[in-house]
Image (cartoon, rainbow, N blue to C red; front, side, top):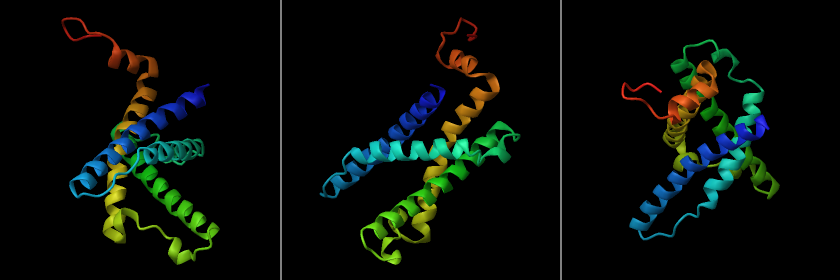
Length: 162
């Protein structure tokens, strides 16, 4: 049950973020008179990347960051998982391209529109979008998940205390 909850939280977080990206793209494309992107992109990517995230966490790829201060650990985990997501995306596109008979060169995805600048842009966006997830997760581990939940969702008295 614990794994289902972990997966569910990862999925919902990623779905919201990817959904906002699709919404933004829809607005931009609408302003340019182009067609729109369906929200299914956000749902499917969130499902796939939540599973990748769950497996990567279970492999403890972030074990070297566990002893760091929470801010550094969250930033390090966000950077690590941004790289994992991009590598997974490239490997997935290569596999799909090769499966469909394309050459290896033709199967390499153009991340962020292509080129080094596109890759860095997508990596930076992924990094920033993952920081809140890891910050809250690590804070929950440090304080205890129940204490964090009470702090975030319980009413406060006149002095601002839970």
